[in-house]
Structure formats: C-alpha cells, structure tokens
Amino acid sequence: MLMRPIAALAALCLLGAAPLAQAADKPSDPQIAHIAYTAGVIDVEAAKQAIAKSKNKDVVAFAKDMVRDHEAVNAQALALVKKLKVTPQDNDTSKALTKAAARERDKLAKLDGAAFDKAYVENEVAYHKQVNGALENLLIPSASNAELKSLLETGLKVFQGHQQHAEHVAAELK
Image 1: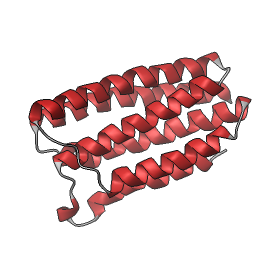
Image 2: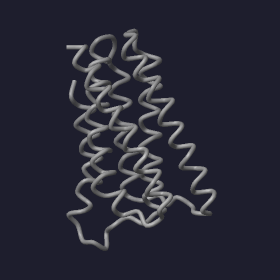
Image 3: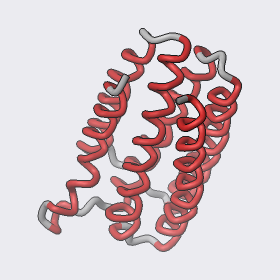
Image 4: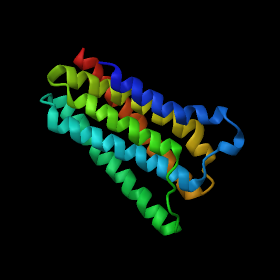
C-alpha cells in the first residue's frame, strides 16, 4: 500500500521545496528545532504503532530501534533548546508534517499482517529519504547556531543508518 509513503513524501516535500522559494523563506533556528523535533516525534509514533501491530520480528526490532534512537535525539534537542533558552517555534512545515502523519497513522491502523508490515517499512524508507534530504539541503545549511547544526549533523548520520536499515528490512519483506 503506497498511500502512507506518498502522503509522507508530499508533506516532506514542503521541506524539500523550501530552498526553491525565496531565500527569505529560510527557516530560523527556533523553526528548525521545531521541524526536527516534530519529525522525530512522528517517527516514534509510527514505530510505536508498528510495535503494537506487527508480528514480524524484524519489523518490530526495527521499530524499537526507531523509538530508542529518535527519542534519544529528541531528548538531546530538548536539552539544547533549554540550554540556549530558545523556544522551538511551530510553523507551517511542522504543522503540515503533523497533519499528514495523523492521516497516515489512521490509514496504517486499517492494515494488518504482511500488508501493514510492508506499508510501514516502505513508509520508513521514504520518510527517512525525505528527512535526510531536508536535513542535508535545508535544515543544516539554514541553522545559525553551531550547537544546533552539530546536533542536526549527528542526527543525519543516525537517520542515514535508519534509512539503510529500513531498506534492508523492506528487501526482506518482498
């Protein structure tokens, strides 16, 4: 089922399309913090859904890795914004991501067994490709604060590993 990946791609294309807009549309550090945190929360919620629904040990193991890693990165992000006394700023991109993720969680909730596993893992591949692209092409280059930029770069390395892991699990499900 490709509905979830397509919707996630559409939502994340907002991130990818932003550099094509005017330079003035470059997100601020508080907006970047909110977008990155929101993307992590979305993946944790999707992973928790997979842990609850899937009976496939590889899918569940992958989902547990997503919860562990995204919660850890988000905890670091919260500690950083607290240290810097910055309030993450909600914005159109993070709102669109949240709205699309809720719709897609609802769609995945209607699937079971192998159909769920396949849709979840395919979405994880697509989601990580888009998030990684947004980190590389928009969020990291737009970040002004060196500590925020460093945290985003560390997150990118972790999330690139997630993408590879998701691709491996997807190949095993075929």
